[in-house]
Image (cartoon, rainbow, N blue to C red; front, side):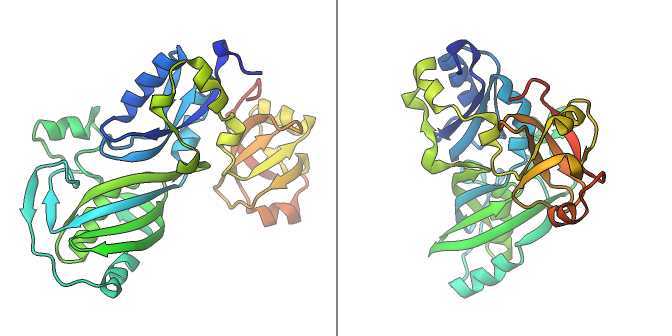
Length: 315
């Protein structure tokens, strides 16, 4: 049983507009009365929605939660180009919005689906020579940035009320939605700035289950809403191991197919995979060296999982 002195798990917070991710962390630290608290990726102050907050031992899985796919509901204002790529920034240029319909917009959307390169904005948390880009941007300094590989899994048009377009996007880690709006606007011939952003989902966490900050006043309010570490990573496929596999993982050795007693979910080479014991305890996260169907066929002593993070006492 979790006690007030050892809150270890993840809170699914519905971040309100106007707060930074760090502001939310500060609130949770005070409410939960603990210092070991961290967020799982920056959400812009103007944005609302899902922000998983890690408490206690859950900070050990932050890197895996940050890497999860995310889903957003986005409003973008056409004809407006700003220095931050959203409507909170200084207007750099206003451009007439051409006649657009769903067919034209869909044709532009198609070019942004799948794997592509995206130039990170100056107003971002990325580093340049030890400094955050947004810190340089505040001083009026612009530096050369390298484009980053991103993946847009889904891009769906929801509504058109010009000059505003609403769409839903599911994407991989490292995607800047402000930049996506800017680039879509350019493709549509008018430029655009993000005017609204709701994070609907982050990995296994959905906005329907997210908790408002204003209902949390003490550890007693936090405890019933804590999600276990294994459940927090439930969007990842998993393998179950017995004592032999558990010993291998704890020693940092590769996991062989013969040590796996059960598999839940499909995975591909390079996928992150949860490793659990027979009682459902999370004992590690690894990288798949084979596709799951290959593992089923070959098994035996072939190495199939490379450990990335090992939890020696289980989580």
